[in-house]
Image 1 (tube, rainbow, N blue to C red):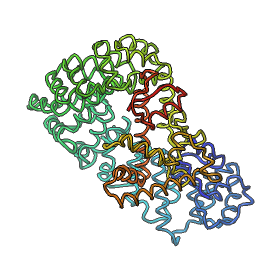
Image 2 (tube, rainbow, N blue to C red):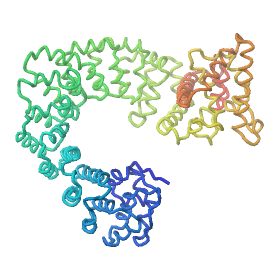
Image 3 (cartoon, rainbow, N blue to C red):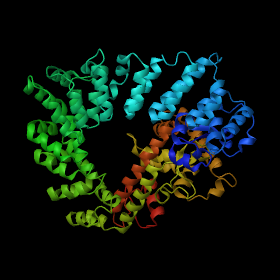
Image 4 (spheres, rainbow, N blue to C red):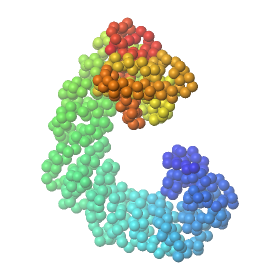
Amino acid sequence: MKFYLNNHCDYEQNQQASVIPWSIWWWVFDYCSSADELARTQCPVASQSRLHRNENPIKAYLCVLFGHPDSAAQALLDAADRMDVSRMTVCLAALYAQRTDLLKLVENDLLPDFRCERISQDDVCNALLWAGIHQQSFLFTQVLDLVSPHFSGLKNDKKTHGSAFDHAVKQGHLDIVDRIVELVPDLDYLLDQSSRRWGKCPQPVFNRLIELTLSSSRQPFDILAQNQFYAVGKAVEDKNLESLNRLLALVPDDRQRTLMVTGGECPYQFFMGAAYPGGLEIFKRLLSAISVDFEAHRTAVFELCVGRALYELSMSNDLAFLDYFIEQVPERLIRRLQDSDCFDIDNAAVRGSVEVLGRLIALSPQWLEAQQKSQYRTFSGTYGPKAIRRFLELAPDHVDDMLTVSKYKAIVAAYRHYNQDRDFLAHITSLASHPRHRAALNNPFFLEKVRQWYQEFDCYKHSRDDSSFSKTVTGIPTGNRVYCFKYNEAKRNILGTFIARHLLTCDEPATDRELKFLLRIPAIAVSLHGSIDPEQCAPRHGNILRESAFVAELMAYRERRSADPRGEYYSFFARLWGGYERSRSAKLRAVDTLIYYIQEEIFETAHLPEATKNGELSDIVDRFVILQSNAATSRHVV
């Protein structure tokens, strides 16, 4: 049995694995170990037995070392002999566990003509890299001084030392950097290996790298130019002005303009990387590096970056960067808003960036027309009601239009973020003038339904496999959970019902006649209405028999289709069967669509008078609203 513990929480909860340091669990164990290996952490040292075929020697012996940290070195070595673990494995395990006493016992056994020299050398190189990453100066010194004399090629292995040097620079291990420089004569190779880290390494290590560069045959600019000035791009991405300044100081003045324009994978890439929230100082510093043809390049930079920056800033409420763009290129911002139909205003409102919203509305007088064109999509208020409140202050006469088009989503936003703005519902109710809207906003059934629905919907979206799924609204029995929508033969009758409902949102929705006909299928009637006793359909096996009945009836109607290809149910069952045969991911998307559909129907039925009974009624809407809400007098007109 294997234990895969790739997150810290699961790792800490396992009593056997948690005795092994997390860094070792990651680097050597690769987040997994067998039950036999982990059992050795609790088995006494004197009782350790021969390795099983499913045990990894280094993992098993590390479990012994970390499970018995107070054991004597000789006892641990005797346990290794009983386990039939090689001396090289003992050596590596002792290095990882930092057991100097155990290392001294096995030093004389590491003969130069060791048969597995090449494989063992790879293992030692692995330990060397681990030392560079985790600042294990002890381990690094022991590997070089104790182990490497027994392997002829280790000291000359530039690739291993180059990788260790790169990790040591990244982590700021100055002592390991100096030690590798002593060992490797090819200084240019080491500097090339570390060029990607120059923008992020600590200042003492950076100063040491500059000293090494000046003593080599290379110039600092040549090292910096490796990998398309990756270090400069990384400093820009990390918004690290200090690192950027020290890197640009290495670039001659006559080359800085070329670096700003052509550096990276595409022109002006560094400016694009800075056009994010918090990058204003970086952006200004990059502009200051252009001294030749400044105006021409400045225009090109702003033309390229305004769209990216405006999109990011409208979602983050970064006023400083936005004010800078308004000061520098207001006409470009206005043109961007016009070309995008105020899409960035939508983003600012949806994300709740109220301050940015005010700035953008001031730049675009046509924002309200754009909202009407987009059916007031901004008023959905996904991230909170504050931005919607701002809109209502600017356009109070459009509240009724907003409520009509957006299906009361602004009110839903208030419910989802009730703790942010408790009086929002009263505020929006006071602005609504249409009697139907005021009735809906004061309908306790509607408000409670919205609250219940979004509480369960949020739970469903954030924990698909474990949370309860809208039992009140959809009519699914209480015992069922969301994982029933995974491909499971015993649960597919419920999925069939959902796909039948999903037809209402297709480009060619089912007609009222088709829906009534569909409701005569017992399996669907059971799930939708509860009007047929499940025990009558399936006295012993419930869902499985109902599923069989459902499939059998659909198969019968498929045959009827072939006999009468232009019959009244041809297109309907063609779509139904196509949906039924979908893949698992498509089925889950159908469920998401159904969730949206039911939400819309709740909003539609919220404002209807109690005594509405005219015309043909749609069973599929009427029954789930009536049966689940116990509002026996409510009706939905088709």
